[in-house]
Length: 615
Image (cartoon, rainbow, N blue to C red; front, side):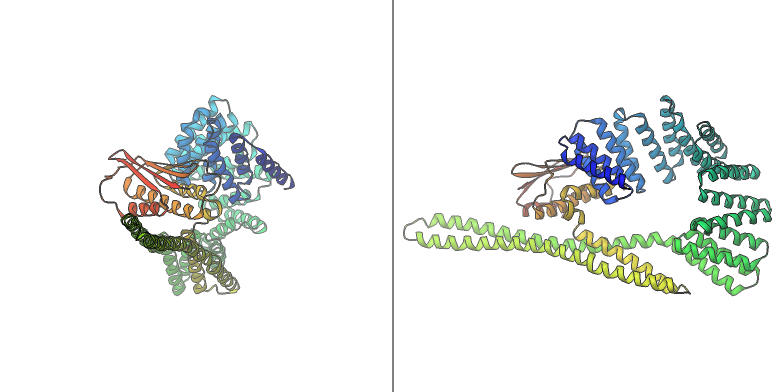
């Protein structure tokens, strides 16, 4: 630990002294990798800095490394669509990537396809990794590639191809004595042999895997293998051996507190005892498995235990309990199906609340703009009046009128500015209150409920439902707080907030890129907030109406003004037609900042919006 802290301090010292953008980007990249698993927030900031700095260089190799790091980041956070997006960007620069980087890129592409259940695409990606490994004689790396291909074939239930690739992986692992690889591959072969009805081959594979696991001290894998062997003997009808291996699995899992394996083997024991007509033991094991599965939120295991209990109670003639557990099974199954629906409803409620608040605030902004327009007319009247009163007799009177009107206008402008500042401050206050006060109270209440639930011997369903409702409410409050005043914008500024927004688009078909120049320092907070809202409105318009595939954002600070240019390759629009609400909102905000907006659009070829804001 101390060595790692020393390394981090050394890297940070180097970063403070670095002058060159390439050198800074490389150091940020190294810090990102060092902090990726221990401090997610800090690692994210270093990655963002590496991205921004690499774009200012002409070093394609550095840009490629940064993109591969972005792929790894999205993979670690299970954002598989984003992984595929950045893989495509990396492969556009494949000439600047080394063999291992290309192998890693294709491997992560294959893994993303795998988790999206696109198994054929996963195989194609992993075969590309194998091709590069062969071309560069990197044979050891092919073991993992073959294993990945074999697993994809398992998902496709193509057992013969799965066996072929697993055997290729096993051969390389044994050649180079890659013990963990041998263990995993044998475990996968056990799965394959089971589905080919080669039960003895499967048992032999699991037992051989356990010999390696003993050497490695991998007790978790040993327990899983015992559980699988027990299931195979049960399938053969050899209940005594099945019980022996289930018991070995149970003893290891209980001693090492492997709860996920424990809940699985207890369920298997429940099924086995039921087949042996040892119903009391069967019910006891189902109940224990159910308790652990609920604590782990393993919904499928909870579901299967309710079904096992219902069937066992039916066998012993306890029909009321059988019906009760059958109802619990059906209710739990419905809750799993409806969970995604409830999540979507919650998201819609948050969106509605946020949009309503935005509309109220925008209405106030538009009223202020009308006031400014009225003031402009008054200024024009003053100028005309002053020209008409140049005569000597009315000179002093005209000066008095002009001064009074000027003073009035100045006060009105100050009032508008104060309203804007108050509006922003109020949003911050509400956001902070929601986060700190309401969010803190909800968290405290949740902890108290959780403590009561853990002490409750009967595990009250009402308490459990209340905990779930409270968790959803906390998340909604957090989301509303963020929408009122994004924390990223307040803490780290406009560039970081925009990049975070674009990162959230990776799950859509829109590919977005941000290019910045001379934006290291912060600008006026009011301008930051309005520019951020302007960009949010533009992005929403592009998503809803433009049907674009590419969005480029350029943010450049010059000596006296800030330039925001956004271009897309969408459907385009008629610029001489009346603006919709979204475009009107954008123009209103730009006018409030005393800026200009120029729109250049060609139907079928896209739109470019160029905004200049005085600094």
